[in-house]
Length: 173
Image (cartoon, rainbow, N blue to C red; front, top):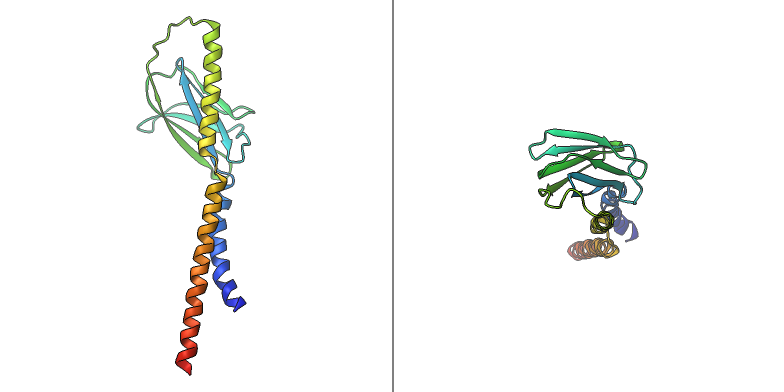
């Protein structure tokens, strides 16, 4: 009985862990636009910064307009960005790739804003990035739900095999 159960559970366990291993080091990107600039942060799912990676600013059609490298903290800035719908594309090590769409509104603020507004804008940008990172994080409830689904499927498979073995035992008698 144990070997049959192991033959059922091992493939299910392997199938469950493979996507988790692939997800373990996914590339993430957050970005906000203000004052004709796009500020962004490039990082891996374990929160380590993706340093020295190329990030492209593309039109909606896929034409590259600017290309920059992320700094030591994973941050990057595109300057002189006009209003419109933009795509940010980053490719990291080992083939990691991430794309993000960003709509940039036309500038409506006066050119010479007080320093207090600049500081507030910077704080809001940091908060927006943190919210975006939080939304992209894999949550414990999702992991536990996935494990529960796998355990349930394994239970159904074991029950089905037990029923089949029971039927085979009766038919042979």
